[in-house]
Image (cartoon, rainbow, N blue to C red; front, side, top):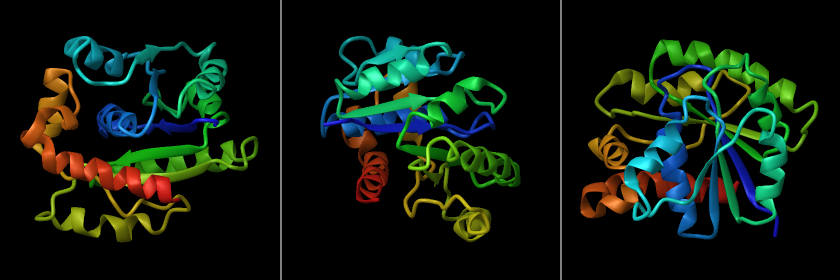
Length: 212
């Protein structure tokens, strides 16, 4: 069975791209063989795994350069049930175009801020362009760092409704567990009770993605 290939990308840095990638991968690993391809030159996902070591419970995280990314995605799809790609945080790189041409699903993490909303305009344009070569590409925004006490957080779904790329119903709430998981080189699943609520957030996203 061909893998579900998921890219996580946003042209704006600091949106929680790697946090979403690593924790989603940990959740998918509970369902089947999973591989993370770290296509971000900063190598954040790979460093995350290095901190946790062999006992972190994370799936394999493999660095891949621009020249090989599309070929490696296709190879990985034949040996894994789920393949996630952590993309560079900018649109200028050819990497993102190659990735979007080779995946089934693009997830765009967006934090509740005006800057993230404005950056989403360019991401939407990139998705529409990518569909010319990959008509089956599905794309969704994922709300991150949500705070129910914040009015902007509460209104984000409505604000994103004007874009051609829809938002998932579920998102990630701002929780200390996500920061702790990164510090410890683990996922929120590996934190036990400390990460239980955060893991529920991730599970809700995964279940929604699998139902699309």
